[in-house]
Amino acid sequence: MKTYRIGQIVPSSNITMETEIPAMLRARETIRPERFTFHSSRMRMKKVTAEELAAMDRDSLRCARELADADVDVMGYACLVAIMSQGLGYHRVSKTNLEGAVAGEGKAIPVVSSAGALVDGLKEMGARRVSLLMPYMKPLAAKVTAYIENEGFTVHDSLALEIEDNLAVAARDPRALIEDVKRLDTRGVDVVVLSACVQMPSLAALAPVEAALGIPVISAAACTVRAMLKSVALEPVAPGAGAALAPGLAVAA
Image (cartoon, rainbow, N blue to C red; front, side):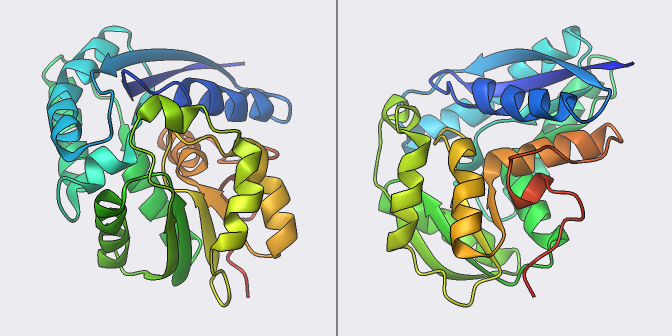
């Protein structure tokens, strides 16, 4: 039975990725033999503003080098909007930069980002039309929408909750999303992204919302777990984590 070390590059005020990522992988341990440990390095960020996000992103290379010292099996960059606010397609640039920093330490460790994982998850599902729910202020939410549309998807509707303080985002009850999603137009969409933010808790709401809507429901965090598992050649499944980690990933007909 192998144990995998999961590295996370985390905003200093993010307290959700270190709960939801382990929760999904602990649930996976109940159905598969592999085991996981979790290791983080932090980048300073308190408010979700363009200036703080840019400064934080520059600090991500230091975090990658620190996690390389721990010889983790995969790293996850846990801030979707930090990537998407830097310019269209930036998740590819970030991956190259981070894996380059790791290579400079003499290591070859795959790096995934929550931004790239969400894009890739939607593509693997064959999604075309999506609706998004996110906590960001409207200018940043517009950048997220434009980023996803640039990747080839149609954003049918989006809902920005306009919460600037990152700890306030994390303090939300994840089950509040069961009500929030009723304000989102999901008619005719292939997939609902219940949380396009890895700081906004959503795990407890994924299955109930999916059951209520009858269409696939995912989150950026669940897609990140999917990308991590694929990076270490493990089957990307976990119970209770929505469509992104369901066996036989598929989009609604």
